[in-house]
Length: 115
Image (cartoon, rainbow, N blue to C red; front, side, top):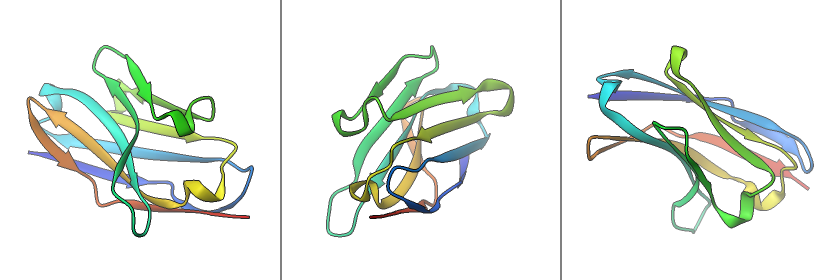
């Protein structure tokens, strides 16, 4: 079992920044990939960014150049640095972990960007 706890969401004006954190605990030694997803009202959940255990990253086109995913292995934590936020980034952001094929989700954190 893997537990994921997100933090760092909130309300920010357009052009501002936020940093989300996702702390992993439990049987984390087999996690091979972690990622951030988001779901806006009335829309499907979508991938925002992912990072493998080897450090390779990928991003949705809509956030490239603005968002950065990185990890602190000593703290078992993955971060999402979000800069130049836009109103269309408003969503609930979820942390995700792939643990040897088993998928785990955090509880989600709300990000609201005002225009």
